[in-house]
Length: 429
Image (cartoon, rainbow, N blue to C red):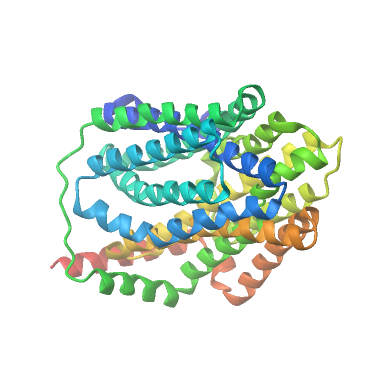
């Protein structure tokens, strides 16, 4: 029993802290609504144009603000009340979804309007994420922070299952417009939760030079090849392996399962991510964490390439492969985040976390553009298969370029953390 229960998530932050529970539940509802929108938009554009390239362009309009604005969002989160900032960003996201619902309802579905509203939503999300991420640690005890982070991973995984599955049924039965209206309604839970929570008084940070502070973090990352290699590896894996833009093609032309099947294709990654998250108790015992990152990326790439080989009648196996790929990605993220938090100096932790987020966000969205472009030039199957194989080759290349990564062990992290604590104490005195 002890080994079995060690795999299960720790629910104590939800039980003990009302504000965290409200924030978590509100975000669960709104994230499910967002996932419904993320199914509706590519499906709507694919039906309008019949072009996987135009679907892939959604990634570009998402990637630009998601790459350009998070650092600015981090500055805002440190300079103003995070709870109020969260209310503002969630309200902005709700209004954007409302605009999508209205233009779809009245038939004003020009491509430039859909792309523009996608960019606006991504802009609000880029500011929302650092605000939410920096608020969570103030709502739970320090000892409960790992459990809270794991619960947030469960939240996103659960939403990624419920939202697409519901979205596929709603689109097939009632149309794309209804899917957008559901997304609008879901934001009421997130906004209401943000209004209701109470957070400790925030110590506002006003750095003398924002640009100098950011450059210090960039310089540190580039010089620390171990950290830089994990970020580069994740960027490469997501750039080559992200095939979300091609799911409408596979649903309509390969598996012939329609909107409901498309919803299942979009939900399958959430199933894999949730299974990986709720059974991740064993990862704390892994010593060769750098090697584990490389193996997880290889597993991700192999599963993606295998998905590209699927044909009509292999829909269930395709769902399993997509779930396996996402489970591997979750494990990679856990190990990468552990390495980052163990090695980085305390006074740089926030900036490096934000920079890591830029790689995490940018890779999948730019990957959609790559997938759409390669699919238009050659074929969707070629884009998926070669992308998966490129992930594996990227892992091999990074291991050769940065041998520190496959050699990295958990014992190294303990020593580095002790050195960081010593440096922090010296700086304080």
